[in-house]
Length: 183
Image (cartoon, rainbow, N blue to C red):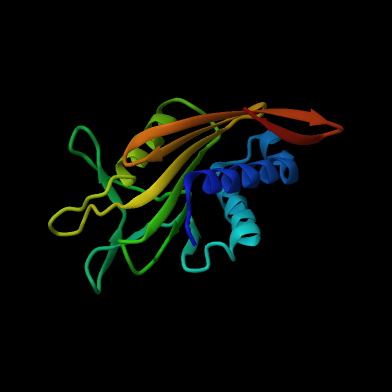
């Protein structure tokens, strides 16, 4: 199956809309990111598992293939040369290969320095390159940073390390049931 940007964008926006409508409690009461990423994973697997059957879909996944037979924690090097261990919130990838990674999603409940960290992490992971030892392999075709606030959602889409589109949704709540209006 071909995974073009518009198809992936529709899937992600649909899953985020369902996340809000089915789990409004999370956003009303400030439930943490790990619970949200777990629920997002469940929605994506239930709705789109068949679409991604040649891939693995994981939440909070921290391993990458280092060599043909060894695995290591995912790491990136920041602008100051510091190694940082990372755990993407949701990914669509092949667990046994660094050559076929499709999508990396970072979910955030608040802005600030952690959101900037996600932007850096995504721009790094969506680059097509690797080190000579294979340690800093990345190769995700697409990435999206999702800022989920109580009344607003922002999605920044990445490809080849660059932002290619930013989308917003307002959250409208009627009779305690939220729905998203994408712009």
